[in-house]
Image (cartoon, rainbow over all chains, first blue to last red; front, top):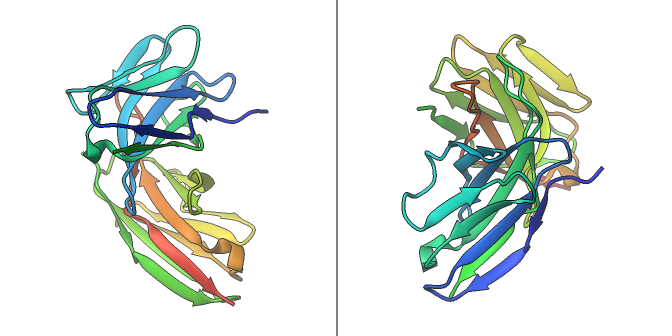
Length: 117
Length: 114
């Protein structure tokens, strides 16, 4: 029973390069969330996706950041033209089909630690 | 939007004693309150959660209480052990327009002294 998988676990990019972070949810989970954690801080919501749909991207910067969850394959968080301030741990979480009116549990992946040099 | 405040930011207790971490939330529509434990360099791990239709939930040494009127909830760990040392995060969310983004507190670094 594999949990949420993320890769790569560590990613080093120079300023101006692109970063691609991948997330495979728990088998059977159709909801994916991305959170960012700066050093010594809490987690901040970025984006919530279902298959082929972005449901809520209110926490994601308008420029340089994009996310997708295609019909086949993992969810991708893409950061273009990275800057030093993008250095953080990026966590993906997944949940099963949610039942109204109470939210479902979210299970987190191991994270991708992005370092921008 | 929702805002979650968590206290204390650091907590040090003797092994065997109890630890209590408190959180307040602002959005009365929030109805799901999970707690996560995060060890250094690891993923946040769901340890217990509570929904707004109950006031208390217990799982072995861990319990969570919820006061909807005052909009606060607390994590209680009894008979603490060294392996309880970690950063604990509370969170809140609601089933609003199909989205259920978690809003996290700032975290509490718990240290258990042997």
